[in-house]
Structure formats: C-alpha cells, structure tokens
Length: 161
Image (cartoon, rainbow, N blue to C red; front, side, top):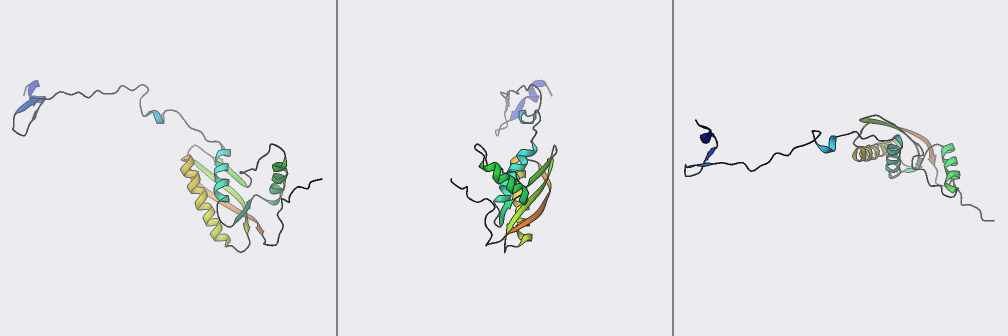
C-alpha cells in the first residue's frame, strides 16, 4: 500500500478520494487544563462562615455558640462598625482536600434534638462541599442550651437615655 492509498477513504460509491486534515492541534504551554494549574487554599474562616450560615438556616436552631460567646458577641455587635459574627459557635479544621467541623448550637424548646442535629449536619455538609469542593469528614454538634418559650432574649434592646 502506498502513502497515497493510506490517506484515502472509501465513499459510498466505492471510489477513493484523498482525505485532507484541516484540524489543527492546539499548542498548550505548561501542559494540562488551565483550570488545574496552581493550587487553591481555603481559609478556616471561610469554611466556618459557610457552616455557620448553613446551620442557622435549619428550623429549630435558635442560636450558635455558648452563653459566654453569645454575650461577648452581643456586646461586639453593638459596637459601631461591628457586625454579627456568623462564625460564632463554629470551629473548622481545613486540610488540602478535607475538613472537619465542630458546632455549638442552642435549639428551640420542643424540637427533637436528634432531628435538628441530623438536619444541621446534612445542610452544613451540603453547603460546605458544594461551595468549597472539600470533603467534610465529620460535623460534631454540641447542644449547649435550649431556648425556652418564656425566656427573654439574651440581647435586650439598648436603652435610650
């Protein structure tokens, strides 16, 4: 078979026609997909914010953090220029491909703690994995308090003098 025969294809009529290739191969510098060049690092605080917001979205979660951290947070929130801390009650340990979370929550009286904890885990894992691409290996939940219906809020309205 000659070189010319190798470059021919058969048409339906059985006649050979020369085939020419018009595809150009792209020259890549650096090799590989541009989206995989380099490394992305995610700070612990980023994962803590995502987890904190996701946990607060669950019905039955009244607040995040222990009594002391909520008290300090309430004072910090009242300082001009301060904002609510979405990371209160959340601690994350972030590795290169995995993360582990510890949450401290206050639940509403009357809800099932097991159901709320399960819903918090599911919501937090889904949000963190979707937004960061990290694998969440565990979400530990500590229920530090129960908000009773007749209890006053721990953050009363500021007095005007």
